[in-house]
Length: 220
Image (cartoon, rainbow, N blue to C red; front, top):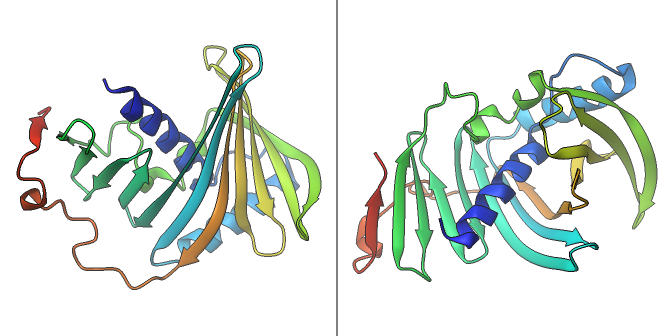
């Protein structure tokens, strides 16, 4: 699989962690209350449009990468633009459009598949599998950011911990930091968070005629 697409899928899992918030069994009462506030806020929006910065660092391996992108979400549908690749999910099928390879990969998504990463699951992703608690609070550019630490229950999980930064005043998510057991740290920071935007009726529709010379790769 193209490395860009692999990184894109990695980002998608992190992005969904970002918006997911979180109805897990309470490990910390204050943490649960804050996560519930974020969940309620997200549920109130018809759609969400986000510009973000994504960084990956591993000092041991001398890796330091930074990328920008954006994602539009409405219900269980989304359009993600990241590292030159566009991924569209129309509620039934996923379309990954790679201009560099002039290829479109189409696949079905089973919403009942627990391992499938879809925005439809963003408010239930943490129903199980994590312990969480309040962590540090920081003042970042005049905003009070409260971090919540999430620890995977599974010893097989390659992540040591996940830190979710929440703006205490607006009850929106500022950033998410994943720390891997191998020393890799990935950070997704929200640069712009817009809601209830006027979207085209074809916003989440794949139009094949726009890609006449592309190879269409149907996986199922």
